[in-house]
Image 1 (spheres, rainbow, N blue to C red):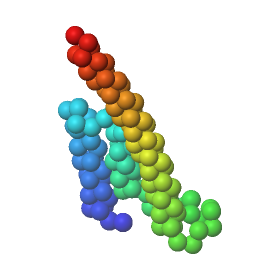
Image 2 (image 1 turned 30 degrees about the horizontal axis):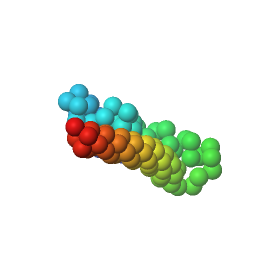
Image 3 (image 1 turned 45 degrees about the horizontal axis):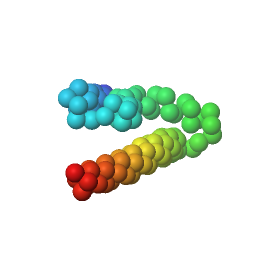
Image 4 (image 1 turned 180 degrees about the vertical axis):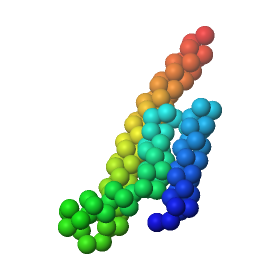
Length: 117
């Protein structure tokens, strides 16, 4: 990989990292979700030197095409991210249901008190 390509990848990762940081700072993005995206930004920055790390590891593991190892890792981390986001969505769905039930009970109490008074 050329030096300019390495610098470009590193700068893209840094810009991505800073955008996520600014969104969290302005409260436009939840902190617990930002961790996953910070890892993505770090991975972009690290990819600028990935071939120096991946090639020897692929040789040791007996992988003939080193980029295949990178794809396996990317797929693995994407699956982890999907599981995490599914967990967050499931948790929020349960909280919305609970809040809806509480609101319905409060409305019932208000209507009952109006009829009595």
